[in-house]
Amino acid sequence: MRTTQIHKILNAEEFKQQILNWAQQFNDVVWLDSNNYLQKYSNYDAILAVDAFTSILTDCQNAFDKLKEYQSITNDWIFGYLTYDLKNDIEDLQSNNYDGLQFLDLYFFQPKKLFLFKGNTVEVQYLHDVDDEIETDLQAIRGSNNLSIKQSNNPIKIKLRIHKDEYFEKVNTILQHIHRGDIYEANFCQEFYAENTLINPLETYLKLNSISKPPFATFLKLNNKYLLSASPERYLKKEGSTIISQPIKGTAKRSENLEEDKKLKQDLFKDKKERSENIMIVDLVRNDLAKTAVSGSVKVQELCKIYSYKQVHQMISTVVSKVDESVHSVDVLRTTFPMGSMTGAPKISAMQIIEVLEETKRGLYSGAVGYFEPNGNFDFNVVIRGILYNETKQYVSYSVGGAITAKSDSLKEYEECLIKAKAMREVLEN
Image 1 (cartoon, rainbow, N blue to C red):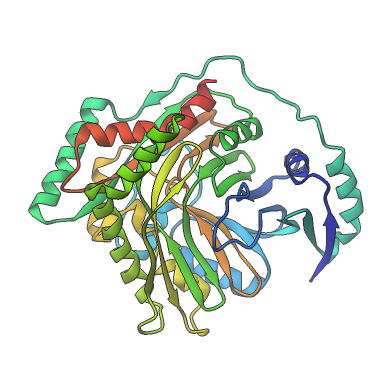
Image 2 (cartoon, rainbow, N blue to C red):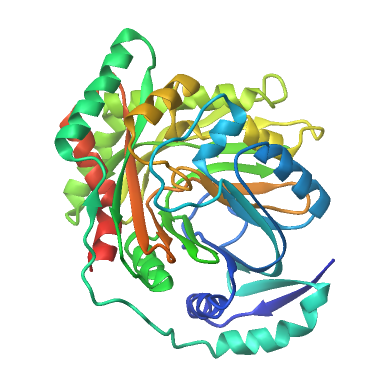
């Protein structure tokens, strides 16, 4: 089905830049980059998939069944996204908030052309229909040095969908729900946006990635819609019979002063409020994984471990399980989606409450981007720290959120949102 070749590359970072420039000619692009961040569960340094041979694009109605059928029939590499609003396919829920971006709920495509990066090699996999283009494409990639920048010089005016005082009121409403026992935790998000705005998507992605260097960076293009994400978080990975979930809950800023930075990291590790947030979501993830797991196989491999990135320290836990080979890969996603780190606990009650209080349809924000391999293995990130762009509507958006628990302070939650938004705002406002 695919022709595979292994090619040596002299300078991996230069080749990445060249191949991203070259990829802009296609309507369907998924670029995933680990930025060489050392992590236990990593198969590739980076992946590029371009040029759809087949695809599926649908709203939320029966979306997981449609994906299951498409993945089974295609039996090949497929790349794409799951929006947060697929919750409406799984549960009796709705998404009625304002949507300035208009991404359809689910999209996957089978790429004609696939590039898998590892060290100083790139594995090229082309469908047989186009394998005579490999050499021509590699020559074009190596010659693709000059990116044509069409950046608007007009300053970007970032607006808030929820203003500060209103944010405090909404957090207090969540706290009332918590004190009544309706929920333990809710991930409450707010949108920052700009209208009548032109950006250069690739240049914007490259700037964002250079600021953050995260392990789950994404450049996604679907015709006129883009995701430019510096995500630090893995949602779910399947490796043989092993399922790995790595929820993030707990954020602290970095400092250029080494002693202060070390203290910020230690303070995050000891922070009772942040640890309680993380542990609540770990319990939720354990329950979700148990729906498809072999009995007794759900284990917490790491609890509240601190990982450091260029912009922030993050508290991350790792939960693993084993699944029987009879369990379909899509069913593992269906029974764990949306990820607990972006909803709250109990999950359904939290999603109902945040739907009422949030002002924006989340769409691809707090959804997932990733891929299935032909053998059913998969790897998906969490779409956070990302800029979403509808080029036709000239609408730019980024959202940030935080976990509200009984110990939350409205002002501190607001300040944490601004820390998470910092890199995206810097990139857009230059």
